[in-house]
Length: 451
Image 1 (cartoon, rainbow, N blue to C red):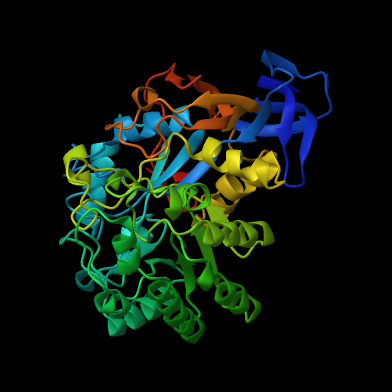
Image 2: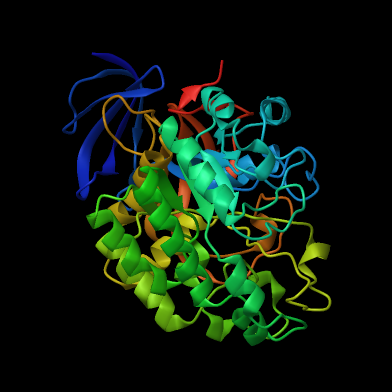
């Protein structure tokens, strides 16, 4: 069989790491066979002994912010950061761009802004806000991957939350066309009852976003999902207190999945000094014991995916000068670092590199319905990250491609160097630097290129 390129490599499978030839033709994997299978290949890529071929990572929780807040981040910078970190598919959140992706006109504006700027493939979530209820089917038919809603203020006024009766209506509407509702699950009442955060004490910020806000929100969402038969996805789980009910709901056939993020698996409240607002995110980074319970839940499958929640802003909005947690923007930028962050912690706990591939590629793709992505298997897109699991590097903010070099990880030594990134059989990055132009595609639901 004649093919375009053969990767002679150790490669990640669902069950472990195997060795052999991964053959690519026309941007897709066409066969996997033992070494020296005799393909007539125009190019053979031999990985080094310390390298493993992973599926390109699929990050389904990214705030690109363009158009409208491109000074925070944009498609060019965000997708460069993605490619440098081995991420080959991004699904963009419906906020904090202006306009938010809550109607067909806004989706068109997003696609127009992204065109010609993409270094990786990009799709879009739609938004479920009060004004878009009753009109979600149109966005679904136009190719968004699902609908995001908030139960409390989102941080930007143009993306308002849903009241309890509106969440019920959204669940019913989305279930009617078997769509997916994804939710920032913190209960507005519990947050309103918590102490307000003012000033630089991290303990005060942590108290303002209690565990109970996630627990109550998720409990209510699970009841509604069971009532309507809605496919439900819980975003950025930070509290391990909420995890057991997710597993119980799945055992009752409630159609729910959940994700967590690198910062909840890597950072702890104990290491956040007062005034270090680069660590602020919502929900917050909690204590070390909570982090260990999240790792246990991930290993047991009660949490299915790890995605970045890349949520950048301008440095001024992080209030780095005053360290005021009450006023600072809540968001951590980690799109370029996600694999190394998760792998560095996973390896210490006895997990394997193919586990990380499942959490950060196969599972996000499956949850969002990004077909033909996230696995090294025949018929899938030839999207790859070539990683050296045992190699180390120190995080240098000046080497990050996202627009503003603000990160809580500066100076941290990590395992797992992404040496190459490939998109549909073409190399797009090497050692964190781009080597091609903007070759990414716009995707519609199902992973289809947008017409």
